[in-house]
Image (cartoon, rainbow, N blue to C red; front, side, top):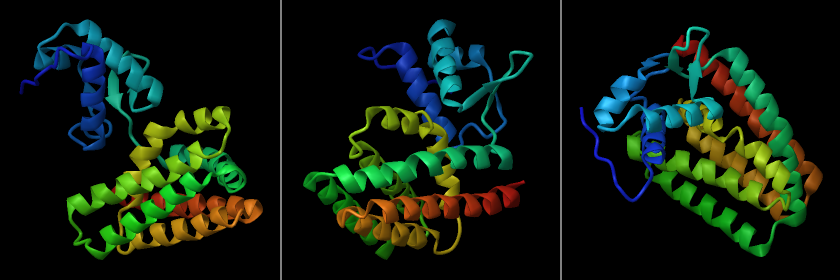
Length: 225
């Protein structure tokens, strides 16, 4: 297999983006070993930009290097999902509270439009890949809008540091009958609290929302094992 490289972007950025997409789309399976030399050969470039891309993906947690310097794709575990979602509960519940305090009319409008699009996708959802990808994007966007409306750059960075693994788990979290509908319903409830400037209830409901995600993910991961 040979991949085309665009000269307008640096090689390591292109390799990074390509590998990340391939991990999310499960072209590379969880636990699969990644060979630097093979990637370089397939992209028809030197190993140096591949090494940079791998290092960046390691920092995001999507690739893992063991004690023998073997690089593999991140593999979800119950312990890790619990740790990540405990962090998300603390950080994103605070974000919801701050969004209820600081969100501008433009932020409220963006959240409303996100939910409108989400309901439209659900109405047309036929259990197909396109629908799943659209819902995944809208789910991610909903939380991003809240994060950006907090007026707290340090909190945004803390949440952003978990973004890649959160996206990884968010894909798994959408598995199951009526799962998308449940997620959007909870988003609508959180939105109403943010719009009505109810900081305390927005915090509590976001915490419940992420805990519900965690409990569902634990079932999905157990079934995959």
